[in-house]
Amino acid sequence: MIQEVFGNNVKQFRIQRGMSQDILAVKCEIDRPQISKIEQGKVNVTLDTIQRISDALKVDIRQLFSPKIDLHPFVKWAGGKTQLLEKLKKLMPSEYDCYFEPFVGSGALFLNVHPEKAVINDSNTELMCAYDCFKDDYLFEQLKAELKEHEEHHSEEYYYEIRSMDKDENFLSLPIYIRAARLIYLNKACFNGLYRVNSKGYFNVPSGKKAKVKTFDENNFVALHNFFKNKKIVNLCVDFDEAVKSAKQGDFVYFDPPYDTPENKNSFTSYSKDSFGKEEQIRLAEVYKKLSNKGVLVMLSNHNTSFIRELYKDFNIHVVSAKRMINSDASGRGLIEEVIITNY
Image (tube, rainbow, N blue to C red; front, side):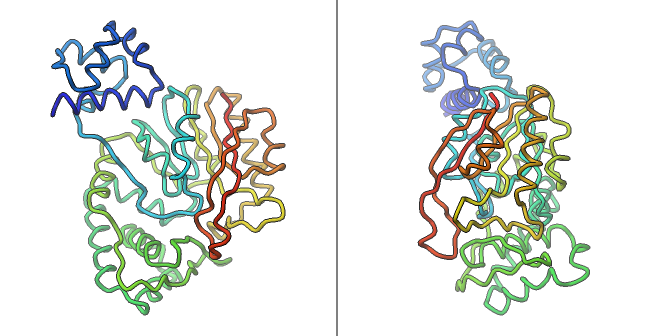
């Protein structure tokens, strides 16, 4: 079993770094057929071979013997990238230093690639409170306890009582695990898993009218907790420009902002009380170009609109199809065209 775990981890880390078996073989000075056997768990490797592979992949030896990391988003989020993961991963750079995601949302891509070093950011303070809870043992246990309380007391009346908490003037002074648990509970119990606030910043999605609500998966929560404790992850809640200020040559930034509205179509982009309109899209494009000029590897997702294509006309534009998953009208959840834009 140890050989299988080691072999599978070698294969996964090799793929994440964009290496073929031939390239890894050259870096390790090991025959390629031997690399193949190692990845299949058919070889009882020596300490010398383990060290060579560890150095070539730039991975701590302990990670090569750890059970597979399998992380999933803990909330449903408008614009989530679960359905486009494979396309995004294929377009990611094969190697990079630090991972940045200034509009992290549910973190589908971030959690799937689970980088060693990362800076994640979102304008939603309660969402970032949740990410912060995964980094600390005490906060993590308190978060789970709060979520279990919500599950136990769930009802229509209870839902609206919890929903109205953000109207209290002392809401922002509550412990972060209470605010985080509220966000997760509302996300699981509300209509269609939609996060939306009104012009005053109050959560205003109606109840999903569920008899029971399961707020979290224990195994995934534990895996997330271990990941955030053992990796170098910085959590921020600032403007997207500020979130990437420390990005340098060789780092990778993935922008997944609120999307531009397709021509002649209504599109949900109201993630917060502060709208993300054309001016913000222009400002984002300027930040994208500044990063590119610094030698930062940059990838961005958006709707395939003429406005976005014009903003990024000097870069590589890849058109992909995606299904709109969150819409109050089921007929509005069809295929739409998106773009994935890279500077490499």
